[in-house]
Length: 499
Image (tube, rainbow, N blue to C red):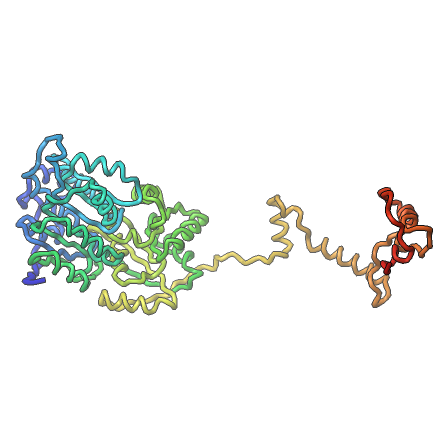
C-alpha cells in the first residue's frame, strides 16, 4: 500500500442532511430513524463520494454498512432507470461478506436505503437452492451482495456477469481471510474490471489484510475512528473463574442476578452449541442453536425468532460473531473463551451497539490462561478474573440401588415396575443361605434326577430293546426303531465301546 493517508476522527459527526445525498436517500435514512452520523459514517461517506479507495477500520456496531451503502447508491443513481430489460440493470456494485447472516443483513440495509429509488439489489449465499437466486439475477440487479463461494457457483453457471462492476466492497475482510476465502476472493476479483472503486471495511487490520489492500486497492485512504481492536466503552466486560462443570449454572445465575431477558451465548464448536442449547432447554429456557451445520432456513428462523424476542438464549458459534445487528441485546456470554483473540472483540460487539449499554461475560477455566493473555495483549488492557459464588444447586448423584430412587422409578411405570427392592433381594439371599446350610460342607449341589440314567444296568437281547426299556422307565415318548438296522453289541450300545 502506497501513499496511505489517515483521517483524523476528532471532529464531531454532522447530521445526514448536511451531506450531498439525493432526497430519496435522505428520506429513507430519516424513515429508518437516523439523523446524526456515527464517526465512521461521517469520515467515510465524503471520501467514498469523492471516488477514493477506502480502508475503513472501526469497531463493530458503529454503522459501517451505511458508511459504504449510502455513497455507493448515490453514485449509482445516474444509472437509475425504469426499464424492464435485464440488460439495463447490470451488476454495478458488488458487496462480499464472509457469512450468510452478514450477507443477508447487508442486503436488508441496502434494500431499505434504496427503497425510494429504482435501483435493484439481491443477495446470494450458500445453503439454499440456487434456482430462486438465478431467477433474480437474470432479471437484472445493480447491487449484488454475496458470499464468495456461492458467487463463484453463479459465475461458473454464467448467472452473474461482473464485467460492468464499478464498485467493490469487502466487508469484514479479516474474517474472510480467517476462514480461508483468500483464493476465492482472488478468483472473483480477477473477473472484475481493472478500473473500479474498492472499499475494504473491517474491525481489525492484520498484516494479511494490509497485503490484500496493497494488491487490490489504489492509493487507499485509511479511515480509523477507533484504536484498532478496541472494545466499545459502552460494554461492561466481566471475567469469572469457573470450572467446566459449573459453566451452565454460572450462566443461569448471572441471568437471574442481572435480570437479563435475553443473551447471546458463544461456544467454540458446532457440537458444543447443539448440546448446550438442548441443556438450556431442559433447564426451562427457550433456547435456539445457530451454527454451520444448521440449514440456512433454520439459521434464519432462529435468528429472526431471537431478534423478535421469542427466544431467551441463542447459543452460537462464531458464525454469529461478525456483523449481526441485534437491537438492544443486553448481554453476551463467552461460554468458551475464543481460540482467536480477535473473535473476542467481534463477539462482545454484538451488545452495546449504537451507544446502548451492554454486558459481556467471559467464563474462564484454568486451561484458558494462554487465550486470556492473547486477549489482554490485543485490547491492551489488564484483565481481572473474579471468582463467582454459586449456590450448591447441583442434584445429588443417586446410586442405582438406592431404595428411594427405585421407588421413584417404580412410580414412573414402565420396565422399572419390575425392579426388586433391597428387601426382596435380601429375602432371596436368606433362602439361598438356608438351602446351602442343609448340605454338608463341601458337598456339591445335587443335579436334577434322570430316571433313565439312575437305573442300574440291565442286559438285554439287543441294543434296541435296552433303549426301549430305559425310555419306558423315563416315561418319555420314543421314536420307533427303523427296520433293517444291524443289531449292535450290548456293551457298545450303552458305553460306546469298540465293535
